[in-house]
Length: 630
Ligand SMILES: NC(=O)C1=CN([C@@H]2O[C@H](COP(=O)(O)OP(=O)(O)OC[C@H]3O[C@@H](n4cnc5c(N)ncnc54)[C@H](O)[C@@H]3O)[C@@H](O)[C@H]2O)C=CC1
Ligand SMILES: O=C(O)C(=O)COP(=O)(O)O
Image (cartoon, rainbow, N blue to C red):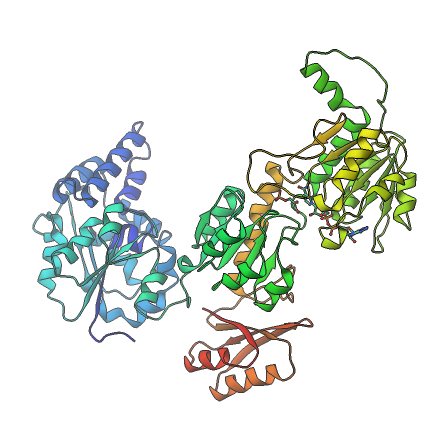
């Protein structure tokens, strides 16, 4: 565990708190000044120059205090403000400060007047806080600082730490160059660049270790901490240009996120996925057995779309990898596009538009029909099919639908018992079946022949559902009056050249798989899927997982949570509980959910436990994955 006598020296501004205290004070004291913004900017510039060692610290302090124009009475408000701005991972690890209180020092070039009351709450007494002190005039105005204090001088931290003459290993944790120099001068043994609030290149480049938060510092030092594995160590790889809000959502929660604009082919993904804990994809990326075998750390896959058959779901389950998707976030976008395309096809708009682009005026009513009173056949009456049904009725279409499952008819929609029945009845056939591989060539020559002469076909589901060559011949022969196709049997991984047998045929609308590509849908998905991912990583929840037993867990405070995924074979729960009993662990809650193949058991336990239990639980026969939270 921890070496005896090790000392921890913390910086204050932008380390223990998220902000620079003098910047906050400036915001307060300059409130009513017309040139407030300029002065604050100047103060910040001076602060940074001081921190980076570009000007002497004494100079930076003198210049800032003059600009601040502060009063003793402002300090109370400043302390209140700073109490709200304690760094997140500092606030969540109070226990460390309490347990190691005797070994923790604050050395800051800030001021004791506001540091003392803040760190007192963290069990750091005033005598272990080394900082400057203000000088006031008779009216209480801050007019300067104690110039005899070493911390008011250039390289003051070095001098201060030297004077302290601490025993044992000394570790410095801070965000600035002035913290690093203690290590450079050989008085401190290690420097941790603390980047939770601000990432300063100069400090990070010189650090023995970069700590994006206190969790990382505590993890590296094997010290008591609130979470067992720091979030910044959890790597997330997001492919296929998912909305940037997904990046923000996940990185704001502390994860390390990498964004790649396009999909990766199998071989590249195999390379890239090593060490990745969370993979985010859309419809293009194939997550095969080989990819999953190479995924040594993978816990969860987020499909930032509806379809999930690009993922080998059975194998993910065998590997204990949970899969989430966004089943409703782009539904409306697809439906709106279908409605638009149906109207465009019935009016032959794209043919007329192409002609006029080519310089030809062709005003005619031939082959141009209203949708009102026409029959729309919806194949696949799921989330998209049903919503299309409602909107199509609202513009006067008669809706027929066919689904392999029993589906309730919405509005006045008429259920067809067979596909044949639907095809024969429809002026427009719109496909919204799911992405199940058994739907390959579901609409081929035979089915097209059963459609009405001159009918139009819309496919916004999956490319393999329609035999493209059969569709092209039916359009060329005039059997079908038009088609709108958004999805293709084979689609490129990124934007660029593309060929299909449907190119150049009149009244055929071709789009590059953009049914769900609206700002609204992508933004919704970027909230929905990351929330599912974070809920699983942070708490173990699997609600809405597509391949895994669903379980909603209560929030756990001050307890450990063990997550155990195993093959669903008889007797495994008994074995898990045998291990827990052997270590005399007090179970405060236990939750189990299973399907025919896997079991997922979550056990909440009292705070302290013997680490041996972890190894024993991992070694329980038929364990697939084991993880500890908190
Ligand atoms: N073009 C695009 O950008 C987008 C395409 N999609 C695709 O749209 C399709 C539908 O999505 P949702 O409505 O959300 O799915 P869903 O799962 O809610 O509905 C699909 C329905 O199709 C039915 N079905 C499956 N095979 C069938 C068959 N052979 N015959 C008749 N019914 C069958 C199912 O029973 C189900 O009711 C999916 O393939 C999805 O991947 C989804 C979003 C965007
Ligand atoms: O949601 C789906 O299933 C889609 O087809 C949309 O896929 P995309 O996110 O555009 O790759």
